[in-house]
Image (cartoon, rainbow, N blue to C red; front, side, top):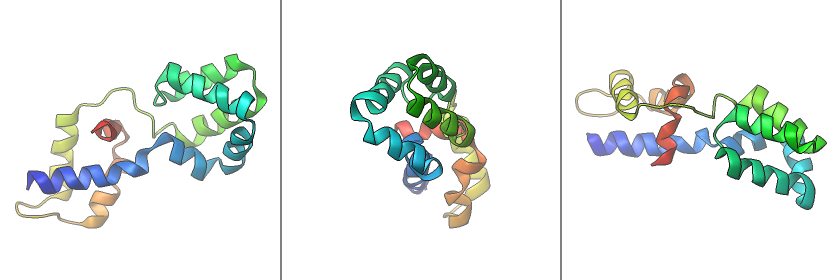
Amino acid sequence: MKSILLITLLALTYTADPEQCLKEKCPNEYAACQKEVFGCASAAMKCKNQCGGDDAQCMLDCALASKNAKLIALAECGHANCSEVAFTYCDIQICVESFKQECMTSQSLQSFQCASTFLQRHSECQCIMEF
């Protein structure tokens, strides 16, 4: 049962990728930034390295400090639409217990829908992406 739980949680992590969220929810801003390799894209990489890529407020502050208009537009869009993807603190044990209670029966996965939407309901559990 533990292996089913871990595999399910790991399979869900792709949906909690900050960059993927930017591509989906800020496509115009993301594309504009990617086209400006030596301006916006390099500044974005610097911010990602500085902030770890998972702190929405740090990324926004870094973008504003860069003074790059395209990066600022991307960061503002990301902050508005993807900040739930970023995480600040996560207790893995609590997340595993929550997943078990909500989505597992004693023998197997209770519902694929429950599992597939778990991270949307529990943004505090984004740390699962680390594994």
